[in-house]
Image (cartoon, rainbow, N blue to C red; front, side, top):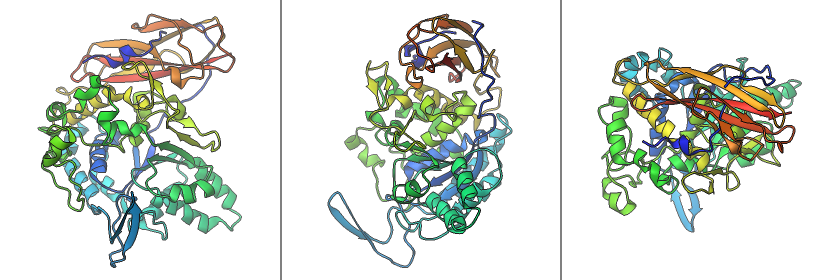
Length: 501
């Protein structure tokens, strides 16, 4: 497999005589997170992969919610009439897959749990994960009319005294999260505590939205909680969604096709991954009537059996893997990481978003592309997924584990134009694998938007000269990437941010 990052603009960094900021990373502890999901084949596959990464997070809630694509109805026969694409439809529910699927997948997680513990003893107990499952606002699209078990749970987490942000992943509509915020407002708005409560919750909640799947963000959260941090992924998630074949370059298609998933994920990896949904695998989802992944649709859709279907919600927790992978994107969404790169909205300063204006230069086409902030990490993500699939069935000595990467200096440095920045890193591998080093510049992540010239790109130590035209306050982002030679090849990173003085 071609090393994708060899195609990136590379950058180097040997030891240093540059002033250092005495900073402490905000990513020292596991990110606290709540998942809200409307439930469909896309969510199912995201959730199955998520369960392989629950050791990397502090899971606080797993909440059933709704969206404009999936809602349960109220059980009383209430008819809702909607019009989309010129078609008027009346219905009592829409493609609702129930409130048992999370529990069912956790049951399958429990069957591989003991083996996962051989690889990391911090994997949470299945019964604990089940205790976090709550039913939120599921009855109708955009429904936030009443408190629910799920909204009350989110409310309690946002009001607790635990330190650090709480990342609310929105895999469907924002309505259950919106109801939690509305309940906080209703309880405290007319009390002397309101300003303190508003500030506390606004500083604590970080909502990562995959597409805008109901109106509750626009109609309630944005006007009433404008200081809550929002990360809005409207395009980059398409790399892992149903439209993936239109977003990936040909060179990466093998990582999404049937042979790769047959060998690395779906088969002979235990009951959890047996349930992973692929094109034409014969699995049926009760309650979801759209058979676009069915065997009969393969030829019409241009797919082969066992091709990838979709994990469009996975970028919301890929973003949180910043701590585990060393990419520091939790400090600043504009830095970019496994869950994409996002730019602050000029008129809404607490909202970061992707879109037509957020591009990274693709080495495959030589053009800036809106998908490349996600695509650039694709090989890393797929290989890591394959390794964790092996963890479900293999002993520690049989499977591969990623290297541990550190820097020999601070992660944040200062340097003047014309000065040499000398950097150094080191890594160890849990399996004793051979390691290769690569330093490269993430140009788009910095405010200095030109390439720097580097020496020693593939050494443990390297250097670059801060360009003479760099302005005071400019930032240059340098990534140390370390790859092992295990099977599959696994990568970890460290990011250095150099500020021009």
